[in-house]
Length: 208
View (cartoon, rainbow, N blue to C red):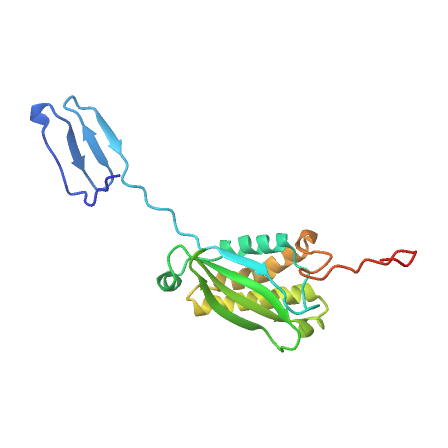
């Protein structure tokens, strides 16, 4: 593809019966000696870059898990991505086509949210942070899942601030987002991720 870097060029060969190309501020016109013309659009601007914000879960302490489903991860990724504008600071530090990944986890003996990261994965072009939720503290809440989501989004906004990503839209929509997700039963599993399976009961004859 040939890029036209300036709209100040003009070629005039009308007296020889050859096509005439004339540039103006709006478009390029290719005219023929008989007066017909075709308007060629300028090079179309590139679509705005979208930085994806992705969520996953990995729980390492036995029993310290939350019942968020894979559908929850996908929905939260979509909702938060829609509220984020790409950051020049983030792009300069990592790259214009990198995404941001949050790994949700939990620990029992911590009093508040713990954030670890960033880890940069060049092959997948992901910058990853881990959010360790204070499991024991959140279990004392009347609505554990809503409280956990508030902590998750608080951690997301803290990371955004450090990376130069605006948090205003996330802060504004936080409570309505929590309401939408927590009212959808598909967002939760009956068992939390990575919870060990129930033991197989012994047979009645005593054999295993």
